[in-house]
Length: 376
Image (cartoon, rainbow, N blue to C red):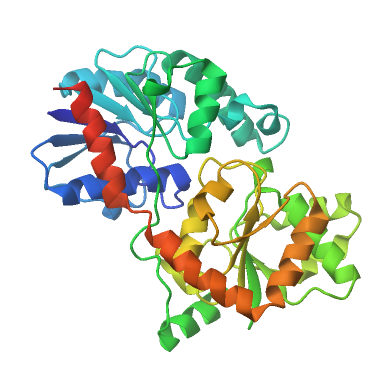
């Protein structure tokens, strides 16, 4: 069987969540050493070393171009040229006109909900508009839709009115290098390179409204005003001007002074940051899975996350839950967990077990079974 896999952006240096999911799936299929041939369609970029050909993997580089043109023009032409039996599109969207069966990974339908369209950067808004046009068309053409949590599975079925047999949950995971780092030299190098405080709360967010950066700033402001803010908050590659505008909106411009910025951190170096955090904060408004939750749990850092969408499903009983729409709830969770070493230890132990229960090997085996069910 010749299986085409759309992985347009896996070679870019600053990979997003869906890029990492596609990359880890392909690596796991490669490691499975099956008799199938996988044709990976991508575009050239800075990080060409992240995936090598061999063991059933062939990489086909298509011309670098804007996402819709690449997907709607170059990709279907390549599908015909390389005579694949099936195409798996890994990042929500797919060509409208396709000559072979389609498997679609529909990570979420957040862009079809009001929360995602009124805010965000121009790039995020354009992406939402494109998906809002494309997904309702191609979802009805797909032979199978994969999604990443039972929560999102039910949302997709309810939204489109699909039969439950069409949509299958295949969980994401964290890469193998996400494990607790104890080597003092590695930890010291990361601390120096990224200017890490002696103690900090680690927050992974960006300008997407669902990441709830404003709610986090409000929670920090509440803690600071009551004299209960225990340490700095650490953020990665996020625009300082964006945060300053949010801080103005909440009436506490100085709250930005309580944040340490690392700049961009390569994925391979993230475990050394997780491993030095006292808490990991992930109070998103809406997630379909939340890979950072699994990364944090595997690195044995206590997690605070939301009581909404997929997040309780993913962490099970291995995290402290808060209401992301209520800054006081976020603030209370931070204060309570910071001041409870026994609970921290419990969540570290439970988190390690929960994080290890997700694997890319199982993801690949489940995905391969779906391919085989379509092409006998």
